[in-house]
Length: 404
Image 1 (cartoon, one colour):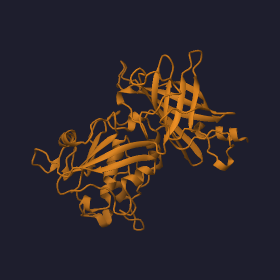
Image 2 (image 1 turned 45 degrees about the vertical axis):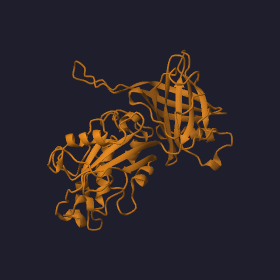
Image 3 (image 1 turned 180 degrees about the vertical axis):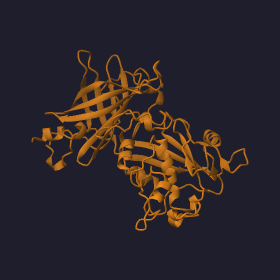
Image 4 (image 1 turned 120 degrees about the vertical axis):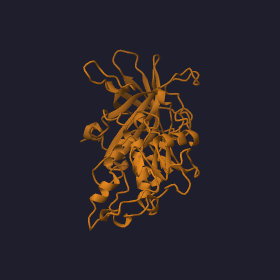
């Protein structure tokens, strides 16, 4: 089998990634990371990102496009000459979100490569039909191929040699052009702001070497956790915080409410919470912007909770895990009962502990591989704060994976 044929094969149409030592010198290389892309012609303009990552001998790639008016701040630039909006992984306005791109094939050509992708148009409204059905959020407009060639990069690209330009085959219409250039080694970036009520603290690590950065870097997210205010209060004297209380605290205290400019999730460490019943933590926000966790919640005095039985949550190794579990919900994930990963509820993990593998030692300090794949490749609108409600990505097939 030729190198080209080998690259063109793979599960779900995704090419295996040969070792660099076997790659011909003239073959274009797509390093893992985030690419700034722009697509357009005389009738349309979009910009966005493309995520490329190699794993288990395959390449997985997906992207997002946001509508853009080139007459606003871009002068006479054309596709192939569009610079990234700033250094690192770009962020775009939520209201401009338009397409999810699922790359299904990367086929090496003599001097470049053919990038084949499905374009799924996003419709934010949840529309019901006369017969009780629902119009899907995502509509497949078609499968397209862009014939990409190495090109001279405009300013702003940190690796000018990893820049490509090509026509997108769309039938008899004027073909739009696609440009793509590498801008960062990781796929997405976000800020997690942690505010606390008095006499609590921010869970920045688990006391055993696991941090926000180590967890999220494992699936190529660039996350900055900010230990912010420690004097958050509310008007009610009740020690139990409600979602309304937490939302009011977020509006008053969050360091940056401009979610079009920054993916900033808000975490409130409360004493106790009521949401909708007494619990350890809850992602309460409809648009997945915020969550709160009860630092003084106490583990039940039951054998399955092992060395944590009867202890306050914020005194245990499970404090960070609880917050990351709720953060997973804020990023669009549901519960996952497979294994002992972050998205499995804590009582379920404790219930399945054994004498040989007791709780909390049976906690797996990672997201299940399927959930990590979703966080890498789900559409922006489904994972970013302020985007679509939970569940909006369930209609989308991910690259190299079954439907979520």
